[in-house]
Amino acid sequence: MRYLIILLAFFSCNKEDNVVDVKTEPAYKITKNISYNGVSVNVIIDKPEGSEFDVLMVFHGTVDFDNLILQAAENTLNVFKGLLDNKNLMIISVAYPEENLLFGENIQHCEAALLWLKNNAQSEIGVDIKKIFLAGHSQGGYLVTRLNTMHQTNGVIANAPGPLNLLYRCGLEENGEAPNSQQCTLLRNYYGTTTANPNAYFERSLLNFTNGFKSDILFVQGLNDSPIQMHSWPMFKDDLINCNSCQDIQFLELAGLGHNALFNSPQAKTKFNTFINSR
Image (tube, rainbow, N blue to C red):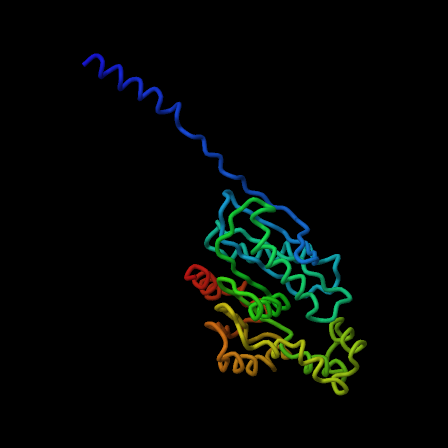
């Protein structure tokens, strides 16, 4: 009996000595310049504590000038983070360029960010990437919709994506019915007017990217958005409903809400989280 008591005491004393001290990787928030296939772009990485994550990659709306894009990426990260019920997702906000680029050319920077996340992030920042979701607002919604025709992810959310129809929008500017924008001015200087070269404008419109979606996608649209957006929204929605080469497409249309509907509606927040959590 005395021997047994001594033996139990020995194991009891060594139990604490043998406990492995597992250090959890700390949380951090950094801005990093990443590169993939020779294309570079800045991203803001908001990593929770840990080393294995589902990731939400987000894309800001139009700001025109590149000295504003890091702040736009920061703001976009914060508003999407505020929507998430699951605070353990890592969020990466892409500060894609806009200035002096023809509309849509920055898709190469957004694609580089996504492919870096898929292929290089694990080795460069030392985390295991599990599921990947894309989300974007306005021009960011345009970009994630286009990315969905190029690469598969676990799901995509687009709020008020656009421009839906550059042919219509830039035509209004030419006729003096809408204020001039940097996007249409650059296109006009390069291609000529919408009347002279309509195909060039349509090819860059989101209406030209309504087929071949590789992942499920949720579109959120406030029905009190700008007249330019709402003019083309029914046509865009009909084209998507009739897509025979798309994964599941969901729509949330919100009466009485405008361009920021996703961020101003409890119903939209619930739908946003349900969409992510169910995949």
